[in-house]
Amino acid sequence: MPEDRTHKVSCSSYVNEVEVAFEILSGKWIPLIVWTLSTEGTKRFGELRRIMPSATQKMLTQQLRALEKHGIVSRKIYPEVPPVVEYSLTDIGRKLSPVLQDISTWAIEYLAGRNSSSR
Amino acid sequence: MPEDRTHKVSCSSYVNEVEVAFEILSGKWIPLIVWTLSTEGTKRFGELRRIMPSATQKMLTQQLRALEKHGIVSRKIYPEVPPVVEYSLTDIGRKLSPVLQDISTWAIEYLAGRNSSSR
DNA sequence: AAAGATAGTTCCCTTTTGGGAACCACGCCA
DNA sequence: TGGCGTGGTTCCCAAAAGGGAACTATCTTT
Image (cartoon, rainbow over all chains, first blue to last red; front, side, top):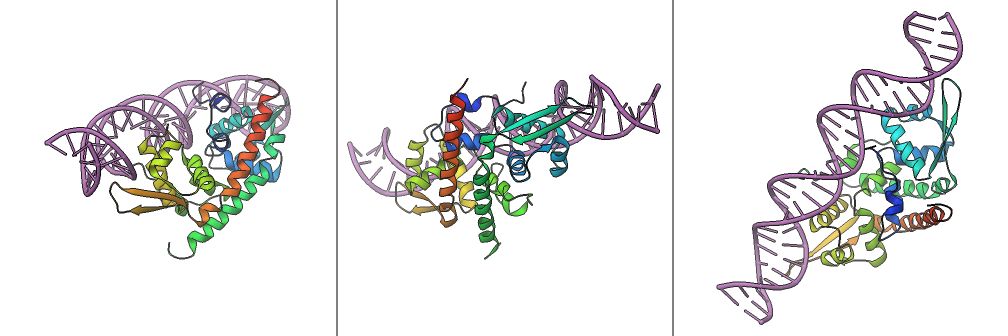
């Protein structure tokens, strides 16, 4: 299992807790996945693919697995055929929503400052 | 210049602004640097090294340079010898402080939830 | 004359991340 | 019987990130 990042969070020691959050939330598609589930609620795998078309299937499942192991998202499988799999935020995952909102607000201000005056 | 990440932020297009913030804030020592400057104010290079002893000199300068290019930290050089270089947050960098505080609060709750019941 | 302090840079290597293409399983429906 | 749709996995490779050790500059102190 070479592409696995399990347990890092629970095994390492940190100078500050912010590192924990950034470790969990780091990954090319992670912020977008959490943001999407946070603003739009439960989504099926295929819906997420359509929302993030430039993420490959492999990357999407990989990042979702990581979030699941960290307890941020939960995965519900309906034993139908063709399969139905739904992803949603857990309780602690849902508590990230206001934080992500604030980050987004900061980023908008940041980008605004970059555009005015030069560049 | 292979270890440079300049301009990514201003040249790419993003689905959501959260990605901008996570891109700027991604890097092994970035969150800790910003957190330190945010809670303790201006610091000299050597002080940062002492605060983060497991960061190599190379990594520390590299991450500080990236933050400088993104306009999050500012670097003041005093032309003395031996050299004195001070790092501090810019205006927009200082506005990250409450966000980081909230992230930290979330992470503390997250870790608390992980420790109670199993693991 | 040599060593120390500060803040770097450079070169080389290892590890981690990310991405593409092909493959699988299952039952349904034409 | 052979696609189709869904939600994956596997293998292999390329790119990016991180890390170690050695080197630099400058003036001061011993």
